[in-house]
Image 1 (cartoon, rainbow, N blue to C red):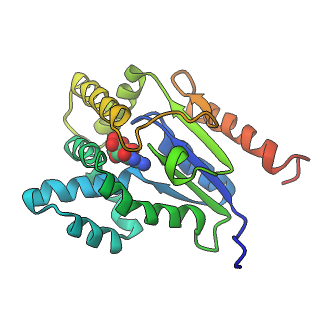
Image 2 (image 1 turned 45 degrees about the vertical axis):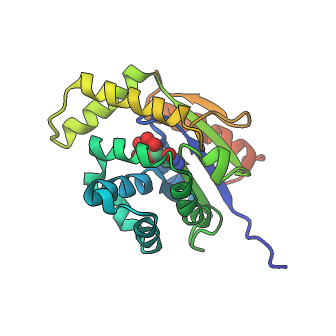
Length: 222
Ligand code: C5P
């Protein structure tokens, strides 16, 4: 039997705008890991749904996922709020989640050889996609703080938005993501809780790094 390659695997779940993406990228850089923001896959499909309306079918989703490229996930337009809500709506669909599962698992457990492992963030990473990850984190922050961060992100991108609308949209998505029947967002028992409400990006990363180094470098070796 082929032996599975030993890799560093990091699974992160979080509600929207809690800082998981920032931390995921920092972790990837520090430990030379492939980083996948799985929310972007749902957003890509959310956009496809808005563009195709009634012609949005499972067949179309399968075709899109079959031809998915990492660069498709970097499209700045995916950050739009209408796309985020559309993503949350399709994310309730069990069949759609199943179509995306293999792509995510492949990134998680079979990253290109140049990487020492992988870090994925999303809503069902610790509970479904990477159940046996070496490290599992649940990153969160209070709604007001998350809304403030997302609002500033939009402003930086010169998007004309109101703070109250950003807050309303995040609250709506929290509700959709936490209450759906398939793969709802939740903190698994074996995930480490990181609340970033009062933490700077750096302080948060140092906290995560300390946890990871304790296991990866028990003797202080680099
Ligand atoms: O993380 P982001 O806000 O970009 O995710 C957009 C939406 O995609 C989420 O609100 C959620 O409904 C869905 N999603 C999901 N499972 C994931 C990642 C994202 O259901 N692993």
